[in-house]
Image (cartoon, rainbow, N blue to C red):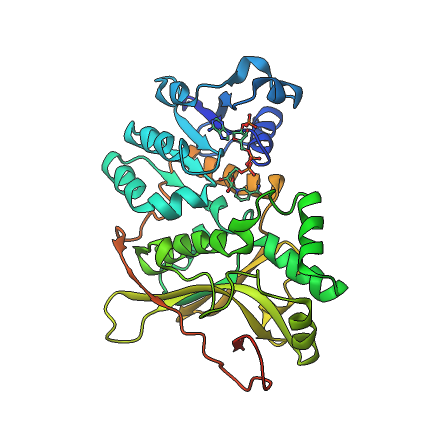
Length: 368
Ligand SMILES: NC(=O)c1ccc[n+]([C@@H]2O[C@H](COP(=O)([O-])OP(=O)(O)OC[C@H]3O[C@@H](n4cnc5c(N)ncnc54)[C@H](OP(=O)(O)O)[C@@H]3O)[C@@H](O)[C@H]2O)c1
């Protein structure tokens, strides 16, 4: 019989606490028929008292993540702390020691993906990150594995639930941006500092990860525009009047992340960008409301395929993290398993041309 895999979870916030709860309460069920059992060996947080009050057994808790990562009795590391450091160093240390890592950290992947992929390939440790894009939607493994026989020509989608919630509420309730943002913060849909979401930087990070799997290169997030031309970044310039005018013309304004192969002869250039655009009401993306995410791939020969579902929230995101853990328990490789090693790609600004008849005076590129 295969020995259980001893798992540590770094971070027990919105996502981590759901992963910990599932491993404690459903541990027996979370065992693949053809793989190892998963045993929760430890949980790290900064505030131990808060975690105990939240129901995590004291005996499992520690505030020393580096110590647990280095512990020879630990087999798998789940990083759910978020942010840049110490998450990056801890993931690198685990992979360097040959330990598989599961993370939901889109920031670390977008900014240090090439370095982490190199370490994982050198040691043979798996790095899985399904939860980093689209929360609970099984989009990355589908792209990397199930669509592997296709050539991906374009990726586009609504990848940030916070901004989609704000735009949807402004459009349907006729309310102002600042008013809806304040509500979203109270409801827990937006952070106290919402800039990464509303300025499109979170969407840029997710686009880097999608582009790695779709086009085989780690793009530099700093090179990907988070606005169209001279517009304000992300959704920060969208007004209630813009949404009302778009609605009257049968259009919906959405924050869209998009990456496509460069024009023929443009070498390894990838056109990429995140910006507020107006979508035709015939576009499936126009109908995506609230915190839901939707990601579409134009694949050859398959055609267009889309993935829609809960893009954030503890239980939804934990579903993707646990799926990755089960894959590791079955001996599965990294999320990019089977794809060629990543190169580095050059970014060309995505030209947002009006693709069909736009109403006169439209402030946004109008996409079909
Ligand atoms: N929330 C979502 O819906 C969602 C969706 C998709 C992906 N993600 C990603 O999932 C990850 C976790 O997000 P979250 O929303 O669960 O975050 P969160 O609620 O802020 O929880 C973060 C956890 O990590 C701990 N932590 C943070 N910094 C630490 C440090 N320097 N040292 C030790 N512990 C530290 C915190 O401990 P204390 O509480 O004790 O400070 C807390 O337990 C992020 O990468 C995020 O981008 C989240």
